[in-house]
Length: 356
Image 1 (cartoon, one colour):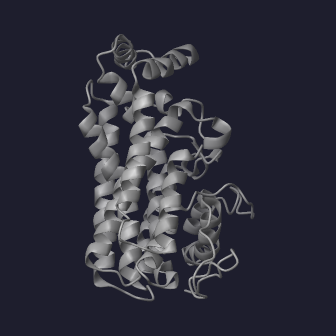
Image 2 (spheres, rainbow, N blue to C red):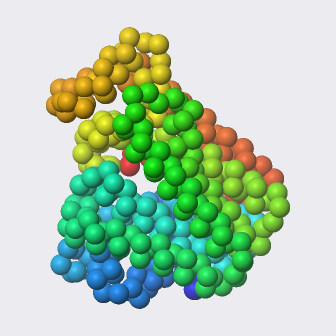
């Protein structure tokens, strides 16, 4: 797979030292230009029925198969792959296949998560399962997972460990999603359990993205360890930020309904932190969750629940924990002295400062 030129003058990994570090927007734009064409080609090679659903999910087509340009994902994970390859002195071109594979795995999980959670909206438009039905949405996710392993097997710089790492990360992600669903039906969830769920559900794939990029970039030993630890800490920061946005994010930015996590009854990190507090607001919040079995909260209830999470300290704790995790992630990069390593730190700052 050929790599697209860097859009920032003087910053190509093939043309000598960069004149400046890129912003997060520039990094993600570059990642789209690099990963977009091979990702589309991979989807094009699927059977027409699967390609249609996957193309809709990615925002490339509407429900009738007509080209469109709906908002796409943030491509943070493939960006981590490419930058990690460069951070160990390698060429991002050797990691493009891994970046495509990671993006496919991530979106496989999103398709399945929407079905499991019955989320009707994804990126501001109807989720794929509401358009094509549950069976075909699940099968399209399966097709993406299979395609991811196929793409990685054909990487320019194949490494036997790469496929194993990706497969193991999928199993761990499934474990995290299973725990997330199970928490909704439990009366009490401990914060340490919720942190473990977040690590499995989100941290695993970010850690794998960094480790795969480092491996295909020629890294080894401590370099790969640092990248993996960076990705895992960044995953926690990412999930904490997602959980804050799941309650207080603006629908026009998140593409999800207002207070979507409270509507779904999610025991997300700020909610669990509030429920585990000794504050009166935490006890009142627990009463709302106990009543969900017999009465769904109305708009007034949801607003009150969001305020209770704040009053019990859940939001403040989550926002501080996200900043701390991002700072810990950046600390893991010490010893990787390259522009790409600094740009990994830029992505860490982006993750905790985003609004969607």
